[in-house]
Image (cartoon, rainbow, N blue to C red; front, side, top):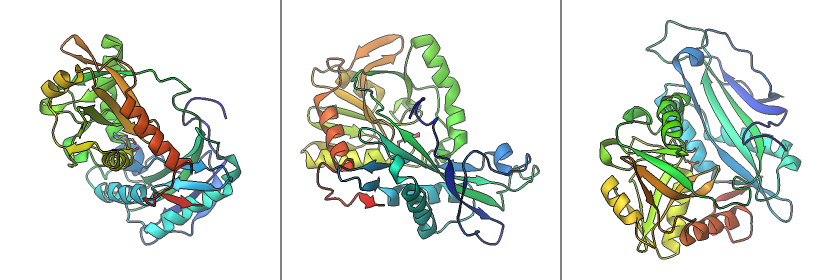
Length: 332
Ligand SMILES: Cc1ncc(COP(=O)(O)O)c(C=O)c1O
């Protein structure tokens, strides 16, 4: 496996088409192209959503998918909010299992994994449907083997706190849709250029929300603080998992609004830690916050102890090194 995260693909994918009345029988097809009209709804009006989940190899070479039910539920919700055809949970589950089984021998060993990318797009050739959903669609499951996100380093991220930028329109936050990532791009590019920031932490109305592709957590004085679920941001499966593990570890988990003022004040305490959560990186430590041309070091600026402990706990379950007592894994 070579190349940047998500640039290597398995040669086949599972696909099914909705023709306006029903879904075709899922098939395994070459993953390098799909036949699509240049006027397809998705190419003009962004009727697209996707998921990101992982399959892991255990010591006995069995393969396990992490929290597939949660990801499929979010996929269905995204599709519904985009007006895309409804899909059966059983069909998507079977398609994922079939394609992962087919390429089971290609699932990397930990810390690598097989990244699974279910995708649903509106295919109707209809450039006059700017204000109407696509009546046809394609749903496919791509696979991409990925390596260690951290490559052995525990370097920390620099986040620019942005109260005057939005990742996406607030009513679209829960949809894992391409348009939301396009919408976040300009603020992120500007933050990289002007502040050498790695990511933007969007803080509409001065309240901490999320970054372009991850949720945000602050840990200080035995309290883990993260934004409560609402429709303005993506409900991360990693966030949900980490919150459960943090409660098990005895941390106080507070799902509540966090103002920039509170974040900046508490981040400077010696025991403070901050992290981004997401499927790709699990938990990525944050070392620096940038706000109003000031730079604030989070805790001692290094990866936090609790952050690393939580990451290890989650990885150990995923890698079959700790018991999966929450029933998060599905054996392929
Ligand atoms: C905008 C956004 N927020 C949060 C997340 C984290 O979600 P998850 O933990 O389910 O990967 C992602 C990653 O997919 C994302 O794109």
